[in-house]
Length: 277
Image (cartoon, rainbow, N blue to C red; front, side, top):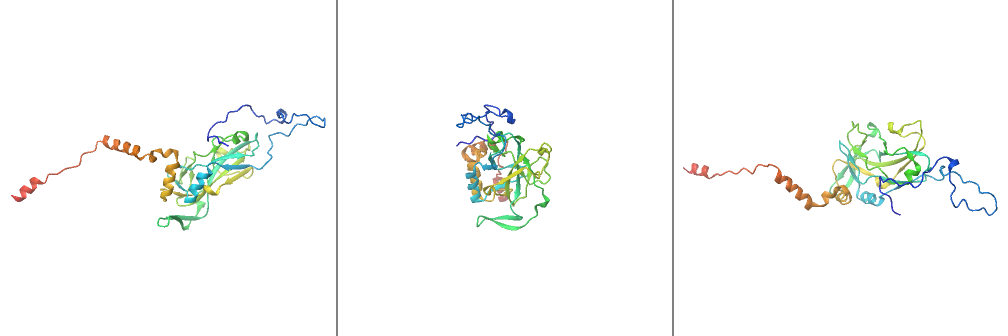
């Protein structure tokens, strides 16, 4: 089945009410009861029946990166992730309001280094993550009804990773050369709590999910050339890097238009004549 694009707004054909008295009984439920007894109204659709499920979108691409060893660039200004975390949610209460959020947690307490001759990451020592408190990125569409969340792909493509411990822009702060894994949280809305103003998970009403293939190592420059190539090949925003001819033409044009001074040429013949004289 096709998946709707991230960020698209599903077209509503009819509004769903959370009032049990206003629920419309489906056509199948309106069929005559063989026993002759009057049909009983079915239970409200606004009650959760099953366990909440979250499916990672683009998992095949994530797995390709994971097999090589995913690396994510972190900068002082903040850098977006590629691949980005995109999910589909199932089995929410259609009429309940939910926040959906993401954070990034350390996989372990180790620091890593890349060994080029063996093309693999090795443990370089221990580290302490307690100096950086995890930040919670709340999806900008929150809070929203479960029905709406389940109709769309939920994308965290605006999340930015930074190594600036003094960041005040809400980016997720991480340390370079460490392994991390994103987590997605489905949080039942509590009117007493404004999640947009806090940076930690509430004590209850939270379903948390993580996916092994989304684990990555933070870097300030890509270490593995295979990762660089795969990112250029698959990232739609890296089109310029995939077209070297076009990119070269632009570069040449810039160089020609820039007022460079010509190379300084010296004529040593007069000096030679004087020396011989």
